[in-house]
Length: 211
Image (tube, rainbow, N blue to C red; front, side):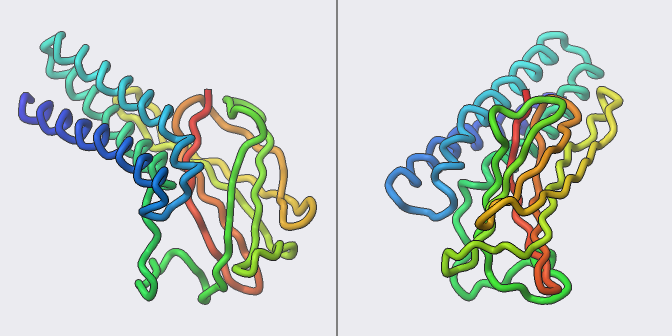
């Protein structure tokens, strides 16, 4: 169990060091990704990491195998949340790099610029969400079907199953799609926005932390 703990702490240290480095890189215009979303994600990254480390330390102090296993399970969930939250900080694929097969289906789609945001601070319960879609000429896309899927991984230690919810957004004006949706509980969620247009589908992932 000590080996498990050391490994988890090492992972946490890497993430803690990489997170501000990514933000600083974006501040200097390097690395790609969405600098604004990356900067917005930093407080949530810190909060998630601190909470997971505190839970792990409490389990270590208890010196109980059951508590430690539960803490590790919860830390794995936190790592998934951190991966989602840090997604905007990732550099874009180099020109000419192969795209993931799941990115477009059933046929290759024209590149689209997709943004996602909740109205106000997201919280458990009913919320309003907005997605903007533009083509590569920065022209609004007004004829797409837009859906937003929310996913939270299962937490076996808490006997909590995986949760998923999907909402469809209607076109409002000038490439802006808006609509109500429910966040099932507070916590870190993976958000997948899917835009279907002209027989093709394009998806982009975001992170969201609900209070």
